[in-house]
Image (cartoon, rainbow, N blue to C red):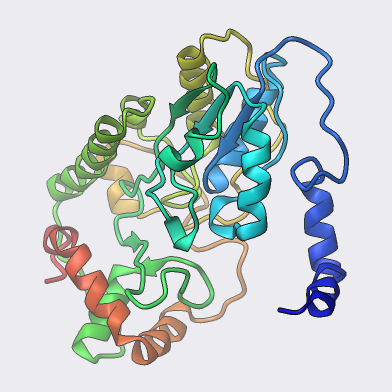
Length: 312
């Protein structure tokens, strides 16, 4: 990209708004540290910014917004390195080396901390116990590719696509299998926590919190995570109520059978909200016809869940 084209891109309204939103990170203003609290950089997906908000609410750390890691460019890599040189603690989800072709893995970024700096890892949170048909599936050709209408897959639609039929596949499942699926989701999280040496959140999820989607936790889960991180960095503070659900922009349906199996009472979560009455099933079937590799990847990745759900 030539200099003029790059300049025009930076002047686009959406780009200007984004850079203003992350003004401290893009050095549009200098971060002000008026106390001796540790400076922290919280890095990861959308869960990371929600965690940062809660940590910052304690008044016990200094922080500022950092863009979600899956949005980073080479410019952001240069900027995060500058940030980390004066950061006391990198609080980060486990990210593999050279993620999306950039040197932004957790271990890679940790090298830019000062000698006195430290790293606290927190897990990528996913829980599908109350949404057993919802899944995240990555295309082997384009990991950023999402299905239409909602960025989540429904395993009943996936199976229909694999069979070349129009109607959603009908599950055949007992309550015991739904409880097994919920425990399997927690076991997967525990496995990741142990493998990555991250703070532990899986115990709390056994209380069956009602999340917005399988990877958008409710505030109670995020607050528990915040206290786990505060304990890990040796800082005490009281997390303040943010006055809104931090990741509540989209609510997925809660499966009534799964809720009964887990002894959870949920009201008003029968459909996606807020969404128009567009037929998600039909839109995603059309998507699968264009991207059969996603169907193949999903059937393979979620084979165990599909068997427990009685879909295969």
